Image (cartoon, rainbow, N blue to C red; front, side, top):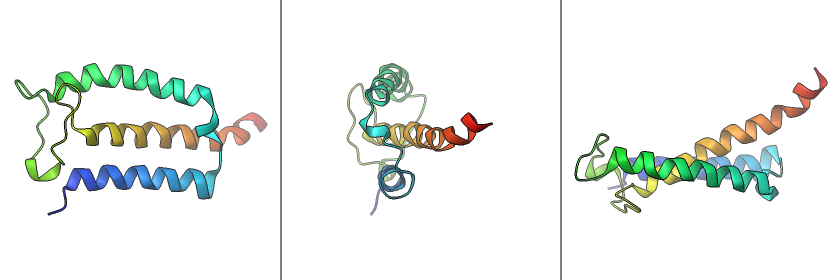
Amino acid sequence: MVEEYSFAAVAAVVVVLLLEFFLLRTGLFKRPAYWITMAIVLGFQVPVDGWLTRLDAPIVLYADWAISGVRVPWDIPVEDFLYGFAMVTAVLLLWERGRPAREQA
């Protein structure tokens, strides 16, 4: 059985990468500021997500059939990192795509 959240998280990453490399072409992945931004996001995601998904007292529960079962660090499902990457990157790509229109206004 295909893990639902796993599939959705991987699909989101693939869609974002395809958007950047074949449609938007913003060059975002070449910029150090993007990677610094992602490190900052990760720095906040790990403690918050770790607290929300910890197995000894979870606030957010995942069905076993919905995720891969890989949890690193602090019981965080690996899918959360994929989804977070896709979500933040998609927003930044669309922001960059809209930049010329904002600068002309």
